[in-house]
Each structure stands twice: as structure tokens, then as C-alpha cells.
Image (cartoon, rainbow, N blue to C red; front, side, top):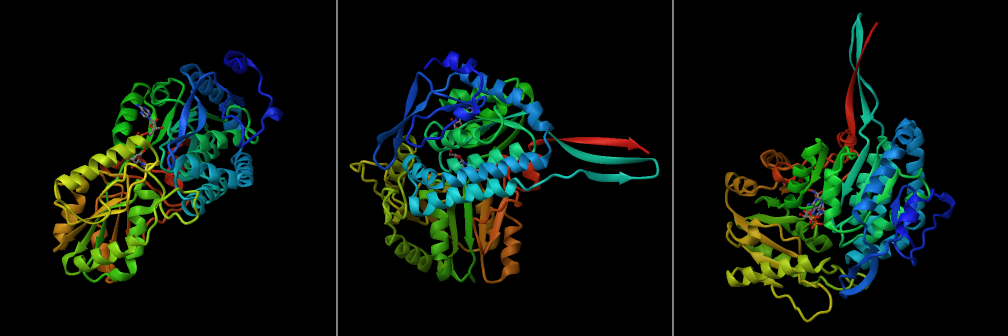
Length: 490
Ligand code: NAD
């Protein structure tokens, strides 16, 4: 198929068909575009080629931005209710393809189909449906005899969205729904490691939204950079590593784009001396190891009071013994593989460091490189030094250090001794004492005696080098808008 001819052709909405067995296509200006060149996407459980994704070019990205720009005037002129109704229809269309999306998510990302993949897709659809109902009503801040001052929120224009490979469905739809309901149009670039679900939910979107409202372009990292530098893009909504986030911020500066950056984390979990620690072992295990640790808000350092540390480590290790790592398509699998070879190699280096430094490992510790997929065993490191790599770095894999502490001031200082500030949790029977510790933690979210609760109305974002701005909640919606102040003389 000729790409140039495709890009020039008028959009035929009735021709848009979503076929989960068919070739993958870019969504540009309401049309599905197959490219001449593709790149391989691998199944991380086998390292076999799963599919070939369209390798979008700079011209495709330009065409996508042009499509989004052309769609913006009519889309932003619609009422919130009209846009919300279409986003609700999008949720229905996604729901109709839910099982296909869950299966594809497991195949491209690795997470277990019956648990994590299912909950990710279901949560994402729920999010779309609920965000469609949210509004940012005008706010009167002054009303005197002479005048009225009213704050309104107006859309920004074309938003560029860049997503990572750990939760491609949820994190993608977290951006699409609030971006569109506030009246913007979007160009999304998924991670080259996990483009497939995004391409499919892009195709599904073309059945619902006017042409150009949502565009998806898969390809290499350079497309991300092009998006951040593009003069017709008003904002970048980015989720990924802190290192890339800094590049995004730097290259967005040229056109003074708005940026929301959801970046890395090194979340501490602090188990106080009075905690009902036996009952929280499974909770903290899943907080650390869910999605095989490939989670920005995974508990990545567990600090346990020295009086219970040894017992906690023993019980945690016992629980870990019952966990099965395997192919996510297998219903007996608890934890899937690492999503890609780059991350697997990073983990190999970290595991080698743990061994070379002689840190005590209570379970796991050795990666069996003869396995066909990117499988890494559940690994617990018992009380390594604070300056060790496993305590300082974000592993993004199934390995966690469990550290002993003695004093509250000491553990607060150690928890805060990191450039990250994404989230944290504090566990203790004395709720007020636990909350007092939570107040001293430098992080965007702190849970007390619960963890990993998210909500449509709960803003989420990092402090320090874990990010800039928030997603979700009224604050997250507002980040997709300009604040416009009207003053009306009476
Ligand atoms: P990454 O930074 O390597 O890639 C993220 C995205 O950025 C990809 O789509 C990639 O193609 C793109 N990209 C790469 N170079 C770019 C450039 N120069 N300009 C613009 N875009 C570019 O991150 P990853 O490895 O995909 O994801 C893992 C990281 O994401 C971890 O650090 C994790 O903690 C973080 N993360 C954060 C959150 C959060 O909400 N805070 C959620 C999930 C993941």
C-alpha cells in the first residue's frame, strides 16, 4: 500500500474495521495506515516474534499532528456533555473487545492473563467510562456590585502522549480520557516494546471519534523526541523513566510546552514496631512483586523495625516460596517474565552486583539464562547496606531489599535519602503515630495501613525527581487546560 496515497486519501469512517487477527495500523486523521516498514515485537515469555508493528516515520508523525490540529476546532467547540457521551461510547467499544485486549496485553507485556492483565484492562475501561462524566465547572472567585471574576478552563490544543511498557493499556487510557473530555485532541506514541494494544485501542477509537481526535503512531524513540519539539503540540503528557523525563522537559522548553511527567520511583514501605506484621506480609509481597516488580509505585525498599525484622524476613520469604513465575498465558502463573531484553540485562547486572557484594539473599538470587523467556526469580535481599545498588537504584524487576531500622528519625531520614519521591507506605497499629511518620515522608502519595489505592478523583504524581504535575482528580483534568480568567463589569 502506498503511504503517501493513504495519507492524502479522505477518511472513510465506514471502512474502519478492527480485526485483532489483522495487521497493525497507525491511526492518523481518522484513517488506519499500514506502513511499508515494520519492527518486531517480541513475546517476553518466549522471545519469539509476536507481531510486526508499523514503523512510523517523521512524516507519519507530522501527519498525525496535522490531523489532530485539524480536528481541534470542531472537537473543542463541542460541549463537555457531547464529548463525554462519545468517550462513554468509546468505553463501550473497548468493552466489546475486552477479552482480545487482555490476551494481547499478556502476549506483548507478559503479565498473567487471569490476574494482572485482566485487572489492568478492566480498570482502564472503568477509567474511560468514569472520566467521561467528570467536569471542570467555571468558578466564580469574586462577585461584587461592580464586577464578577470567573475562572474557566479552556483546552490547550494538540497534546502529545508518550507511554512506557509496564502498563501500556492503563497508562495510555489514563491520558486519553481526560485529554479528550477537556476538549483537546491527541497524538499518542506508545513504547516500542509494547505498541500492540495501543494500536488496537487506537483502531477502536476511529470507530467512535471524529477523524483526527485521537491519533496513534508507533515507532522508535526518535518519534517521542519529535513530538516534544513539534511546534503544533501544546503539551506533553509523559510517563516513563526519570532520565527520559528530563530530556522531554528540555526539548519541550523550545516551544514552552506544558508538561506532565510521571517518572520513576524508589518507594519505601515502613513497618513500625507495633504493626500487625504477619497479616501484612502478603500485601507487601504483592506491593513489591506485582507485575514482576515492573511498577513505578512498587514497594522498592521495605524498612522493618529491628524487633520484628528477622521474623518478617522469614515469613516474607516463606510466602515467596509459594509463588510461581512463568508464562502469563498459563493460568497457574503468578508472575510473568520481564517485558524486554534491555530490562532483563539491567537486572542481570543488578543480580551480579548483589552476588559480588555478598549481600544475604533469602530466596532467588540466580537468573537461569537457559530459559527461553525473560524469566527472573523472586528475590529477597536481607538487610543490605544503604549505599548498595539494590537500595539506591530502581530495579524494575522482582527483587526487593528488606532493611532493619531502630528509630523513627533514622528511618524517615533513610526513606527520604533518595532523589525519587513518588509514593510510600507506613504500617502500624497506632494510626496517629503512623500518620505522623507519613507526614514526614517526601512523596506524592503516602498510604497508611493500605497501599496502591487509586481513584478517578485522587490526584497522583511524584515529588522531587519522580515527576512534575499530576494525573487523575480535578487537578489532573486541569493540567489538560489553560486557566482563563474572565472579568465582567456589571
Ligand atoms: P523510558 O523512559 O525508557 O520510555 C518511556 C517512553 O519514552 C517510551 O515510549 C519511549 O519510546 C519514549 N522515549 C524514549 N526516548 C525519548 C526521548 N528522547 N524523547 C521523548 N520520548 C522518548 O521508560 P520505560 O522504560 O518505558 O518505563 C519504565 C519507567 O517508567 C520506570 O522508571 C518507571 O518507574 C516509570 N513509570 C512511571 C510511572 C508513573 O506514573 N510515575 C508509571 C509507569 C512507569
